[in-house]
Length: 327
Ligand code: T6T
Image (spheres, rainbow, N blue to C red):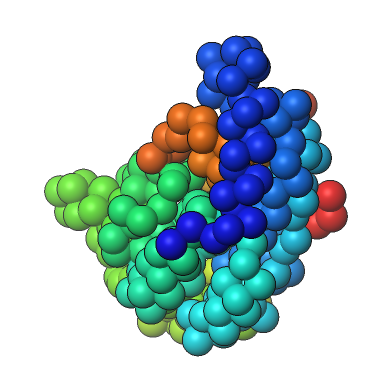
C-alpha cells in the first residue's frame, strides 16, 4: 500500500512535472519538482570510507534535487545489526530507502516488506537474492573486478605461482562476486597460478592480518594475495608487514580508502581497485527521486572502477578515485 503522505507529495509533483520537459528528457527529476521527499540511506557498515564517500554523493544529489536525507549504519557488517535499523527506518515512514544489504538472504524479506509498504527501495552496492521489488540496483561490476585483480597479479607475477584470496564472509553479494571472479580466473590459468584458498576476515583487519601471516608461514612461496574489500586489504597489508614480506608478496586490494592508499604508496600493496561510491550515491538518489516523481527509472546501473598503482595514484584521476573520510 502506498502511504498517504507519499500520495500527496506525488500528486503535487506530477502537476509540476507536466510542464518540465527538460527533466523528463534527461531522465533526472529537476529541482523545480522538489517536494521535500525524505530519503534515508542505510550503509553496509558505519565508519567505512566506501560508504562515507557514498554518503557524500547522496548528500550532494539530495541537495540538488531538494530532497532531505539522513544516514544510518550498523556498527558491524552484520545483518543481525542491520535488520533492526531497517525496521526502525521503515517505522518512520520515509519516502525512499537507499540500502546496502548486509546479506543476500537475511535482508530479503524485510526489504520486500518495506517495498510492499509503499517505500521506494533502491539497492546500492550490495543486493539480495531476489531484488525484483527494488526500484533500481546500483553497483560496480564486482565479478569483473575480481577478474581485474587477477589480471593485475598476472602482470606483477608473470611466472605464476601460489595465490590466496581473502574475502569478508559468504553471503555478501559484492565480495562473493569479486572472490568468484578472482578464483575463476585463477582456475582458468591452466595450473600456472594455483589458489591456496579463499579465506574470510569477517570484515576485521586483525583477522585478515592473522590469515596473511598464517598463510605465509604455511606457504612461504606464496606469490600474491587478493583482498576483496577495504578492511581485508588493510589487514593483509598489516600481515605482510608483520611477516617482513613487503614487496616480496604482491597484494591487490579492492577499494581505495586513505589507509590503503598509504599502504600503496609505502609499497606494501601493489594495486588497488577503486570503485565509484560517490557516483553510486548520486545515482541512488536520482533513481529514488525519479521513482517518487513518476519519472523513468533504470532497474540496473553499473558503475565503473579503476586500477590504482604507485604510478598513477598522484595523477588527477588517481586522486579523484580515492575515497573520502569526510564530505
Ligand atoms: O568494498 C566495499 C563494498 O563494496 C562492499 O560491499 C563491502 O565492503 C566495502 O564497503 C569496503 O569496506
